[in-house]
Amino acid sequence: MKRRSLLSYCILFWVTLSFVVGCVNPAVYIQTTTESGAAPSTMAGALRLGFSAWPGWFPWQVAQERRIFATHNVPVDLRWFDGYLESINALTAGQIDANSQTLGDTVSSVSGGADQVIVLVNDNSTGNDKVIVREGINSVADLRGKQVAAEEGTVDHFLLLLGLERAGLSAQDIQFVPLETGRAAAAFVAGQVDAVAVFAPFTTQALKRPGSRELFSSADFPGAISDHLVFTRQYIEQHPDRVQAVVDAWFSTLDYIQNNREEAYAIMAKRAGVSIDEYREYAEGTKLFTIEENLQAFQPGNDMTSLYFAAEQISQFLTATGLAASTPDTRRLFDDRFVKAHAAQMR
Image 1 (tube, helix red, strand yellow):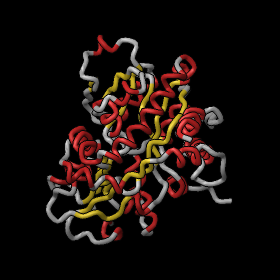
Image 2 (cartoon, one colour):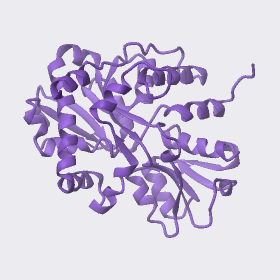
Image 3 (cartoon, one colour):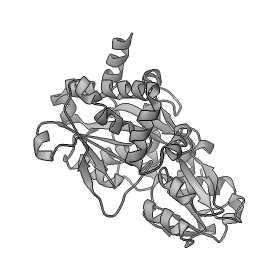
Image 4 (tube, helix red, strand yellow):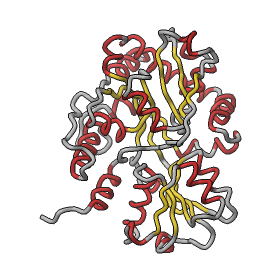
């Protein structure tokens, strides 16, 4: 049997689910803030929850500002990270108790020795990760020889590789320009590169270049990118009641958004740094998972709708490409008791 190339592994992985980093915003200079409005010293003992720039995670801002956490009697020190990768490092280092991150990142962290647990599916990307091109580029084939920027190793980088593969091209057929996501978008707007692979809200920035357009997106690869609420196992063991309260608060927040859409969009748009009209465009690009869809995702299965199956595929990919020295143990990666308890409560 032929050995698969690195690109082939990337494509195999992306046809099923996202690799390593989904929805990434790893800014070089990070500013971490407490979203409670209180100084960190007054939040002593609160659950430290990290999140960063992605439409599927902006509802946490609504939960904080509309006091939904308080309604569920859970003190939350909501911490915003300008750099997504920094939030992952903070969770691994024990500087926060929970974080909003992708399945791929969580499996990668576990392969490095972290003891983390996924308790909730926030969303799947259905178009908010995009490859955007300048005027005159009308097909993926037109990218041949062009300068294309993306953050190396991120979900959008591999989305780019997948699009190239589908068109019969490879990474060698383009001039790849590795830039942090925000800087990649800025370079594209400034006319320094011909195309860019970015995620929302940086897609909005990139599309401000006159004549630019979306070439393809995560909508062309359904189920490729999933995002989650992840806790350290130690925190779950010590405070299962608080974990439950946060999961309950998440679904209450989704209900609030459904019933108060304009007010919720105003809160999320402000956090994203875009207009309300621009934020509305993100709604169709992110599929927020219902409680029923969460229950289904936590079921064992033999396709990518099952988190267990998806995690195994990611583990094999990490090992095969040398990104993990050994296959990480994903058997204890998921804990569905909290979504099950919420479902039972609703019924």
